[in-house]
Length: 409
Image 1 (spheres, rainbow, N blue to C red):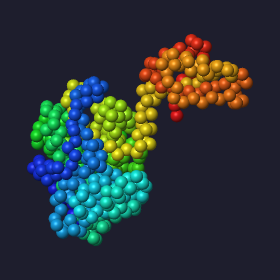
Image 2 (image 1 turned 90 degrees about the horizontal axis):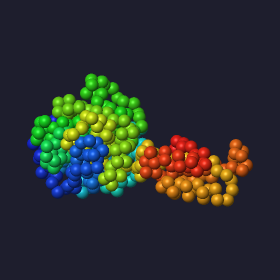
Image 3 (image 1 turned 135 degrees about the vertical axis):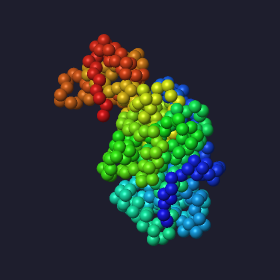
Image 4 (image 1 turned 90 degrees about the vertical axis):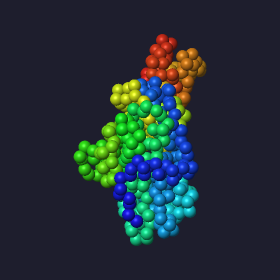
């Protein structure tokens, strides 16, 4: 079935909110005093990672599903996705008694395939990439009468995503800006339509990863499909901006800014350490923009939707460890010591007296490069911060240890 190519209105978004009432989690929108202090502005976080499938994508999928005609509900739906959209379509389709087929490209993580299957969808893994997978989904839509649930380039999907903007505007008075992650552009389009209707002065700013700046390029008049890249924000790794969404973005979104991968990593780590919440790379991109461009948002009241929390556990752990290294909370130290009883204990005591915690230690005594009366220690220690590390090194040297800091990794 054909996509809805009509630009949704504010009335469409309000109608979507009424239609979906009680069928989604009422996610909180709360001030973050610590992040506000760090960023130099008033930060309000909208916790969309608290949705059942841990993503805002449920909104657009649900609104599209609720608008199906009886014959369309009987025929079923099809979608292409390698992540959050797949789970949103699968979950709400099953809940509403609608058959769903999700086409996922080869290479999609097995955990995402399993979650989508668990939500009740028939999953077909095919196509070398999202473009090829979408072609398969579109073929099924045309040949078997399935309704296509597009991840962003559909007016009903955009209206559903726009309900997030309604909630933010009604939760926070006097907002100056909403900073929104952008992949294909459905969420920022819906939020901008809703927010500007309520307060035309509020700034709606989209954020993309520097690896996939497809919407930023489109707004600059640059065309073409971006090459494959590696980003921690895979949820917004879209190679080409949507056709419908780029029209909306050009009309109502104030700006699209691009952030570096390190800023996204920092945002993920801060949200974990400060707010005790898990955010995927795409979900943390809004905060990453405020962190990277502090002067742009100084003194403003800024809403940041945390759009998703589906991050691989190993990647999440790696991000946290890398942030500890960047902040100086973890340091690697090489220390030659005498190969005699008590030498290691003396060093450990010295570190303890300076408040450094030994996380890992490697003891090398058989290397031919060493004096036979010496041993080499490779330590990883936990510290308060970078300045504490300098104090620890100085203290060790004052005690006669020839300690040197080394890069971790």
